Length: 142
Image (cartoon, rainbow, N blue to C red; front, top):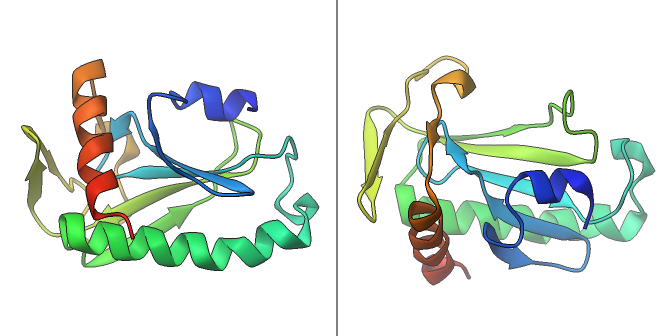
């Protein structure tokens, strides 16, 4: 796995693995259910992904949206491809909602609603919270 994937807590944060992508729980939650969708390859440019990775992206995003809708009943969803510090291809997936959501003893308010997400306001999860939230989202994954 590339360094970006490891930085986001792999393997402890792994929710689902696909042929070309990993879905990870984001260890710092700007909103409840925030994820990282990371390409398994070592490329650092989106355009450098293989065609099969692009084709699989449709399936993966559909699964993400179904699971997060069931888990947090989001009102909008943001896919942010920032790649400023972590160079390998990845998206921050931020479910957006007005107010607060809670699960497994973790509550997170969407501090930016209805404007851009406030990534600097993210709630850092401890090891136990990560384990519980990975299991919680894993249960609703299709």
